[in-house]
Amino acid sequence: MNMILLRACEVGPDGLAELSDRRFHHIKSILKAEPGRKLRIGVLNGPAGEALVEEISESRVVLRCAWNNDERCKEVFRLALILAMPRPRVLRRLLPQLVALGAAEINIVGAARVEGSYFRSHLLREEEYMPLIEDGLAQSRRTSVPSVNVIKQLRPWLEERCVGEAWRGFLLCAAEPGPVSESWLEVRNCRGAVLAVGPEGGWLDDELEYVFACGFRRISLGPQPLRTETACVAAIGATSVLRWLPSCLLRGR
Image (cartoon, rainbow, N blue to C red; front, side, top):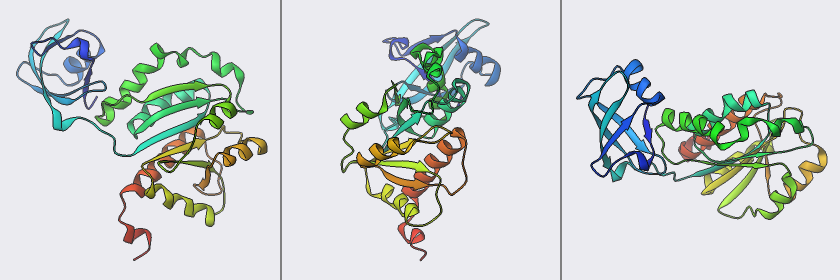
């Protein structure tokens, strides 16, 4: 954990928070904190700040919290992900990474080549996936909790969602370099992007047809087929790099 995350209800009016769960064990056993040590903290969907370890025992730790409003973790660029439901064990590994990389919205969707049984996984319950979300936030020192939506039928949901000027849609696919790659540059010109990653078996032609009809552009990481984990991490990483690289480097100047 690079940040100890708290819920607003855990902090008293006096600024004290008492922990006895896995966060306590991390503070005691991993950080080996003693009274007087300062820790980086944040409130879920709230400000970040610093906490002083007031006392620590074999069963609990008491933190005195102080907030810096300038440290509120705000996202300037919002990235939403449409992810064809992978194997639950893959999703379990992937969720913290998606959050750490800055995904503000994770939409887990069905597709023709997605096993229907995957949607019966306990992992899709909020009480199961929230600890993974919090792990990703703590790793990246973020406090804004991304929304997680489970959508078994992609088409009706996608047709209702308008991808306008502020949000642009991009569909990741295997393709040779060329005009497809130029779509990456459009990421720089929008305030938010919707990135669609299909099943490892690929999208069917009719699925591609209605995704493109909804305004999505085709982007690629190259001709090679990739596993879901690799594709998601690489695509979000590429998006981040393109957002921050100076324009002169992209033009080869």
